[in-house]
Length: 300
Ligand code: R5P
Image 1: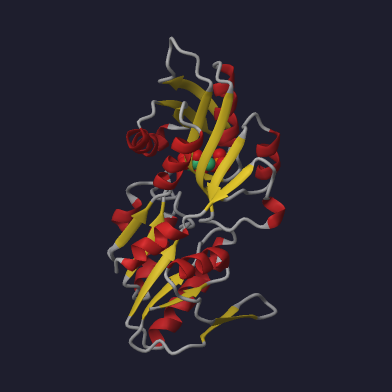
Image 2: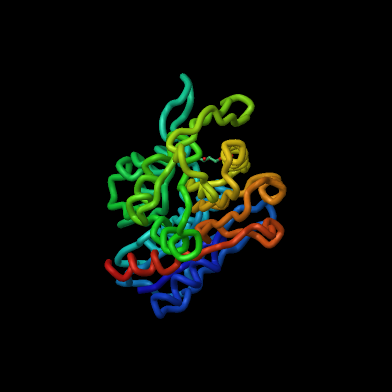
């Protein structure tokens, strides 16, 4: 087996390769002055099973093009199989038509990936449970919940889990069953024009017992608004400390600054998305999902 990486998250690809007792194989990613890319596989892959790791986080368009070209280069070079590992699947939030006239971006992305002849894809904590069903090729949908569950049991055992919106209830229920911890749900509203988030109500907080610590669990942080609004609501409802566990640290615009300034104690994320140094902040901690991905690859 040979494992390749695009340029979006090489540290994660290196960790996956290490967990598989492999080294990263070489691919030349040449960037032209106009930022177009030329991809060239520099190793023999004839009749080899190959893996390509690429998170399609910001800049999603560029990272997708790199992924497409690497897959194409592997196929043209005679690879026996290509497994795409896309720990963060960009454009996944537009998974249906919310308002008349909209495109369904994830459907377009899936059609493109499949048209290149990928054999299977590994994705991580997708936003909608329906997304894997949109693929025709085999999809392996992995989750950070077991990594989070182990960490929470070890360090934050006496807590209440919280979903910051109705869409995250399924995720929080799974974690609640996994580690036997109660959960509450916040109802949020987001203005589709302005992006403003408001928390409307919270259900499920124990009534006769003080909640010292709440743990918000979500799939991604982009602007940070969902988490900040949810944490403020929890504090207003008498919770002393709010911790956050989120798989995908998208951290758009000033999210790191806002989270650092917020009432949140700690933001625990994974390395599904590469976090550049300038986006690190003191409250941030990163857990790795490399072993979870490597364990899945070993089964193929
Ligand atoms: C929304 O349904 C998602 O699960 C996340 O809560 C959301 O995408 C986070 O975005 P932001 O950080 O911009 O509020």
